[in-house]
Image (cartoon, rainbow, N blue to C red; front, side):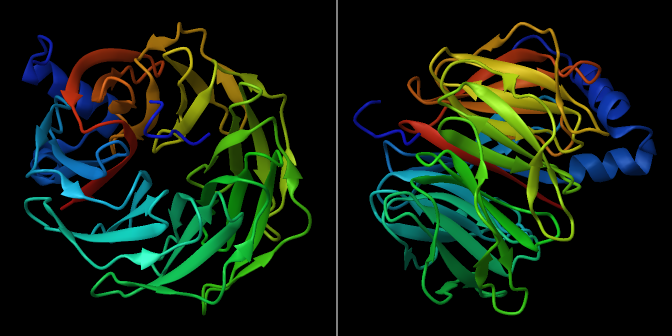
Length: 369
């Protein structure tokens, strides 16, 4: 699913209560030194606005989840669709669908303010970005040209340099993900209803296809790998479900391990919390957020039995580093909703809306010491 431009006070929460929830439920026994360290960290969220061709930046309050704007929005290319930050936390990259380009930025370590770097050419319709875990390579799924572009990252300046020629994908590659080992890359192809698998050459970043694509549901929209690299999850917007696959550590191949889990209508994004406990699905067409448990042994999603949380035209999902807050961009209302997370169930409680740019479509969180 590609969203085109044309179609589309915080509640009464005491700081002490929020602090207790953060420390006891999510952080464990941190102690005084741990608390000081936790609150000394700066956490920022960056939001790509596809209608206004900008990125908005905000500081996240670590106890309340409140968003405070950091500087004015900064320009992107035409119709940004995906936003990722390198593992060092220094360089964000944005895929501009109509601009056929990748914009690069640097992050000020104290203020979180972005500075534009040079952009590079991509294929036609760059839709999704993934960054290799060592921070050496960037990969971009080009939805119109049906291929994957690869780039190396300059470790000091963050500039991108193309690697070879784009590699063929399936029809309308929509989402790209990389295994935590950095050995494998996965692409969900929205029109061919499958997932392409590649190995990543650690020396030069080049991709090599692995066997034949693996069947998915109808119109796979999002692919996510769990933090340990055991399982892959594919959210299908056409069949309104999520499929679970085990990952062969030696070959990177996928094998379906459980029946698909029903979701809402028009899935746009899927996210797993940092500790692989809960999964969240943004259902664009019925204005809802679905919550699931995650089986650590078998990888399957567990129906939480919770009612779907309401969210106006939800598109992207971002989760705070400790998992205590979930942020959801609302595409039609031009806002970002903040939710607190019940650590025992994963249930979401709405806290606040924050104004974003026009048609917020992608988000990334960055934590700096």
